Image (tube, rainbow, N blue to C red):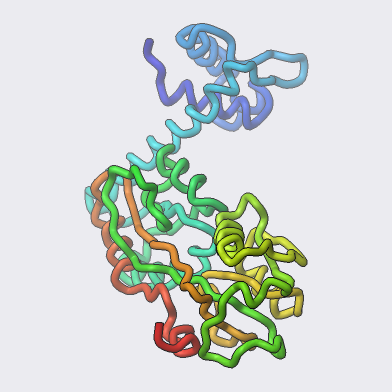
Amino acid sequence: MTISLRQLEYFVAVVDEGSFTAAAELLHVSQPGLSHQILALERDLGGPLLERLSRKVRLTPAGRTVLPHARASLAHAERVSMAAKRIAGLATGELHIGTLYSISVGVIPTALQVWRKSYPEVQAHLVEFRHTDDLAAAMEAGQADLAVGPAPADWDGPTAEIGAEEFVIVAPPGSNLPAEPARIRLAELAEREWVHFTAQSGLSNFLDQACLAAGFQPRVSVRTEQGSAALSMVRAGLGLALVPCNIIQPNFEGVILRPDPVIQRSLTVYTRVRPDPITAAFVAAIADATAVTPPYIAARLGPS
């Protein structure tokens, strides 16, 4: 069996465009030629991938199984091409960075600022996810050149520690909480309302587990997927929130307190293989030049 990237590209294009005609126009190939390649792919795989309807196509069960693998193969091929150019010293193209939504707000910008001083012609493309499991799966599928986040326990590729990201409690002004800097036990906040995160967001686990350890379930006023949105909800007086400290801007007017015990997660930058020079430069930038706890937050929190 010989399956080519061209066949996979044609198959994905037909699915995305919804018809053979539109896919052929997109790829600038003849429709008979495209159809021939799809038939050859189906023959090699042992059955039809597409149902040919009068005005559109529809995936068969086999097609639904093959589609994510086809997309992953094409993405991986693109990553290989980009890596080869970077190894050859061609400082162009894109660097695809997989990360979590909160990390793209709190950690990535400073690293990009440092890195782009050396590689201004290389575009950075963020591939963002809600949960660490989604991030790890994307890395396995070749959707990014590197990942920034908690590393999977069984990851066997290169890794570099960034530091321990600390979570803090934020509240609007006038919340009748201890003055900064202070620590507070979550059990003291059992009757408060919380700005929580959706179940699909990895951030939701931190509040749920912390409250469970403190002996209560949080009273939820509103849920969101984004840490930055949670801060806006807090400023609007909708409740407290537990967020990574580095997403808080210097001008935040509310209260910032350290929970007792401290809540942290370890951040890592990891790759599938030994990084090329341009990727390695970003790894160095995020490992060496990024403050996981910004100085202005450390000053408000006091000694750890």
